[in-house]
Image 1 (cartoon, rainbow, N blue to C red):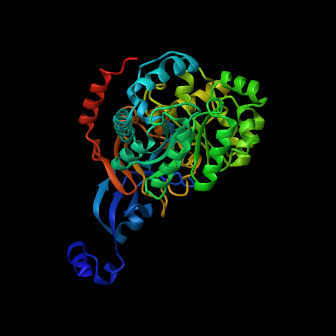
Image 2 (cartoon, one colour; image 1 turned 135 degrees about the horizontal axis):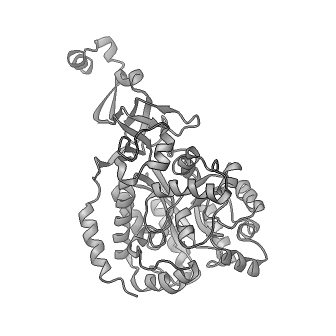
Image 3 (cartoon, rainbow, N blue to C red; image 1 turned 30 degrees about the vertical axis):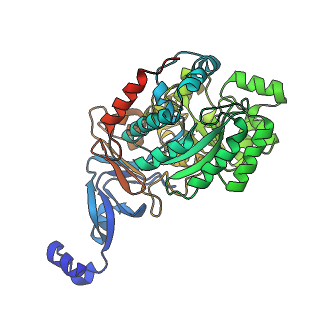
Length: 456
């Protein structure tokens, strides 16, 4: 019957029609930026999706007669890219956006953020902030994020409901925290969280020891043991400021990465956030242990934390992704700004206009970001067999044309507002700039109600 229908309505003969495969979704036309190993670009491409995976990708003329689909998206005049990856954030902190600006990190944390969290952060706060953050990220083309916060189980539920991919780390600190007033129960909570979410198709549960200065050696060793037992990733802030490095040196006689290496904490499940003030020897240890790094240029600049040695890390093939950090210290979750800023920051910092070229900067937001989160086998590039995490951006806006080099256009000219359609795990979650899994106006109304109460 399929062969007969195709022959009647598309001109395909029954002999040819038997070769036609059915698919769920086809993206046709547009410039496809694959970010595969060869960095292949297809000017008039086609992507075929079945369930949650890409089953075919190539030039449209070469494969268009081989597939039919329930839904087709016409990407003519657009740029089709791997979904962006936000390698480090604290997503519920969108509710603290603009609450305490223009401060040093220690003052910002100790005198503003920690008191505000102690007073306001509960499960309802976390759910509202998460919905706001996810809506903002999807609208800007982010398909995967890495989070560390409290009530991470609630974050996981909201993330899964919105259809987004994430590595979610339940925080551990050596003090009472929101959702865990007794610090001795933190490890039990984390293990329960991991066991609940470990087989979920979108959620990767992780452990989030906040930093070497807020978690004891004893508890860091326990974190590593729990990670070994459950194979859960570990997300930790490290070497974010010179004050932190000085403090760890005074306490342990080593720089932070050296200290973590010395207690056998680091491995190929570790994700290091910031890694600003690290030595050449420490970069060697990061490479040796197979750690990923999340670079947060805008947050580091705003808090005057410093500039991470990203070009040196990339030369050693350390997987470095880009993170926005939380919206309380950035103040948005726009990864396009991070891509542009990273490329320019390292040029001026090194005095070399060739430092961190556009191709490398874009890789940090896609395939290298996936590698930093240890997810590059399933996402970060557009290839047959990988998860269908795809962002489609307009490519002919006033601020983009003319396009001589697609990477230059993406890194230096494209904005979050240019994102048109987002697909995560094979499902369309935003189409023609309209969110499909969240009610944008309802999210805004809920957030504005919270604003009336956020005083500390």
